[in-house]
Each structure stands twice: as C-alpha cells, then as structure tokens.
Image (cartoon, rainbow over all chains, first blue to last red):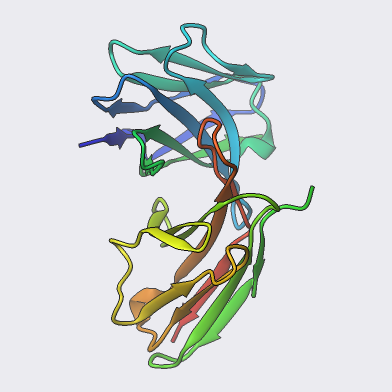
Length: 114
Length: 114
C-alpha cells in the first residue's frame, strides 16, 4: 500500500526565519512524483513544488526547496525567509502507479508569526 | 488561462435537503476529481473522471452522493439527502494529460448542513 505521513500537525516560525516540514512516504513503485501543496485559510489549494523520483537533484522554487532522500523515503520542505503569507496548511502528496491517484498526508498547519 | 471554476462558493442547507455543486475544469484537462475536505483534514477523493468515464468512485457514498460529467467537460456533484457529517469543503480539481500528475484546484464549495 502507498502511504504518506506528515508527523507534525502544527508548526510555527518567526517571520524571516527558516522552517522545515517533514514528510515520509512508502511506495513500491520506481517511478513516482512527490508534491507539496499549500492551502491558505479559506483559500485555494496551490502547488508549491514537485519532485520527480528519478531526479537526484532537489527541486527548488524561490524560497521553497525540498530535501529528497529516496532511500529513506523522505521528502521534507524547507521554507526560507518565512513570510506572513506562508501561513497555511501544507500537504505532502505522492503520485505513483498507473492510476494517477494522489495519496495525501494529513497536513501540517504552519503559522508564521510577526 | 482560466482556472478551475466552482460554484456555489458557499451553501447552507438543512439536513435531509439536497444540494448540487458545479465544476468547470481547465480547458483541455481530461481528468477531473471531486474531493471532500472536512475542516482540519486532508482531501478525501470522492470520484475521479477520465473524460466522461468514471475511473474511481470507491469512496463515494453512493446511497446519497452522485456525480456526472456527461460531455467530458464540466461536472456536477449532488448530495441527496444531506447529513450533518456532509459539512465540508468540496474541492474540484483537474489534471492535464501526461505530465507529473499535478492537480489544479478550484476554490472549493463550502457546505454547511444544519
């Protein structure tokens, strides 16, 4: 079975600091994709960053980067220079196999404090 | 490019009443998803369409929920009769053919059942 685990239900960080959100997953597939989605309060779910399993290089998108450890099945999200607008729920998701069904973690609620 | 459109944004009904939600995916996206997201939880897949065919509806409570995508474009999700536990945000998402499998979400329809 494919699973995604986010072990931190809630986190907080001071504005301008760096925070890392954890995600571990399990799949028997060799080819898969991993995603981090952001859902601000009462707002739309948007894609933050994605990682292809066959790429060794960690994905980066401006202040957002991942630490992808394939052997450990770990996919953490690092947010640098945190901003108040980063306050949101963050979901880790796995897309593996032919059915194209996303497996979701339970989410981490991140609060950026001024 | 227009995003995923959903309506209504908010709906309040009494239990045992019926409700319908509409979704128009991004143009050209063959795959459409309906998710249920209860407050504080991750999205739960209700149904996945590929064009106008159902790919996965294993978690759709078929005694009260129904969905259709007759022409392979827009879709309607209906609940009849509603229960208190149906209070949630109903998210519609679409995905282009191929690619990494990332989903594009609408703003959601928030349902409150009293």
